[in-house]
Image 1 (tube, rainbow, N blue to C red):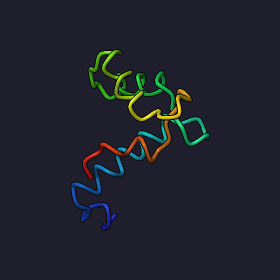
Image 2 (cartoon, helix red, strand yellow; image 1 turned 135 degrees about the vertical axis):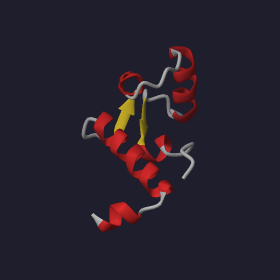
Image 3 (tube, helix red, strand yellow; image 1 turned 120 degrees about the horizontal axis):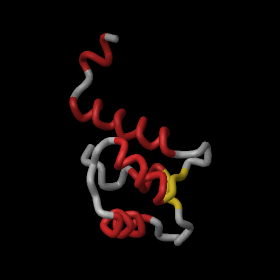
Image 4 (cartoon, one colour; image 1 turned 45 degrees about the horizontal axis):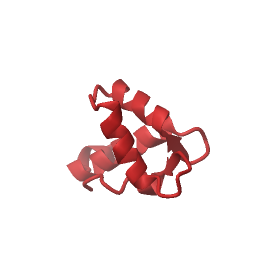
Length: 78
């Protein structure tokens, strides 16, 4: 508990994004556009489908329709 209480905002943010990713992924270590879209709605973040698709495709460099956690965290400011 003390570690959580004394953690920096940056660390809290990192933990929150990691938890969100693991909530989305299906034990494969990757997420698809549909999972990301549902997650964005869940956290009440309004992003148009076209903008979300463009961002997603930016990191889906192999055109697999999925991105892994390393690519998911590339633009997160921590």
